[in-house]
Image (tube, rainbow, N blue to C red; front, side, top):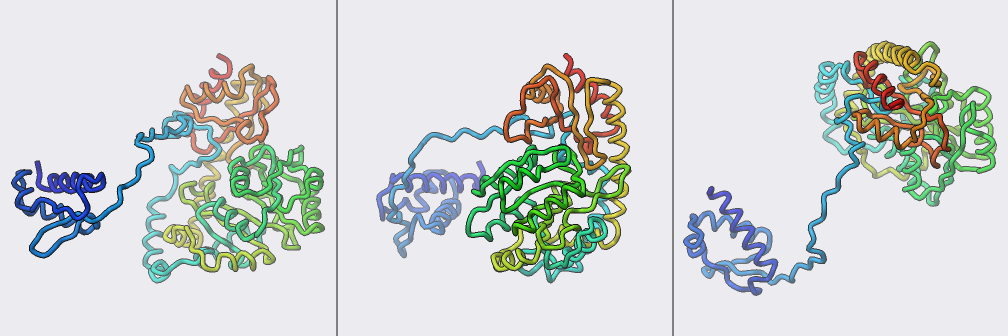
Length: 458
């Protein structure tokens, strides 16, 4: 047995004996030589064990007398049972799926990792001083300037860099925003809608109201009756239905919040990808009265694990936000932030988006073609020619729970409309599935759809 192991063994055994009060306070420990002989180890091994106990405060020394036990209270242990490990829900383990219809994933197989690594090195060389200092909460000014330019010509969002806050996720941005208010706010959220955002607000103690949808998106009439302080909406590609809010509804919503001094939170989560149409202008671009808070992310365009999201605040809220976060420190990776700035500034971001747009267009078209061929009249596809997912309504006698369980049992990652609704969907022979097409390989699309058909009809 190694001397290193023996040192640890002596140290741990003596420490446990002291904590369990096998020794009395101020009792003398065996001498180094005596314990070395008893344990058949070197004196240095015992010396190292005793010195570690001394450093941690378990024992003290008296000159020429040896080591003695400190006076310690007995450590209280209320429950001697060993806690059982928490097992994650197996449906959450994405790596086990053979096919993924997830709306949350992207295809990173084409990500220019060599180019990104180059930008990482360049960022370290150019911004060493900035990265050696305590970062400001809003994120690096260079990245905020790049984002301001990007969303100005891509989304019509005209703003100054100081209005932009960059963070490691949308949840962090919204938490920081609502922490600036001394009282709870009434927040209206689309139903069906982004369930994680709804849970975030509930966990924060905000007053959440659920607003139903119609063929034009969020029901403004319901908003008017609920009188919320904030309205959270996804107007350019409603999540998860895909509905694009028409200009008439946008103006109606903007007019209401302006007249009542309320705010809209526009979540523009996948605005980069449109098929067969030009980009839909942001709601923010129509706002002339500082009523819209704009949320954007690089999760869909680059990769979710990059963890870079941003928020554009109107000035009436920005002053309050700046005051509340004056001493806060960002949780953003500065290395990634500066690399992203260089990625955008060099034009490589736009090149990558164009490349991925072509890839996603090809995947989406093949998905639609095979689904129509295999399911024929049994399906309705709600395809708004935007984003990285669409809705598929399908005739089946299966329940939502049965579909989800059978998909899991067949190694398919699949989500249904049930996940995004506050209440359980009404029992019907038509079930709605969320079909994400980003992550799946072209060669796997047909076998994946055939497996889905087998699940639905077997």
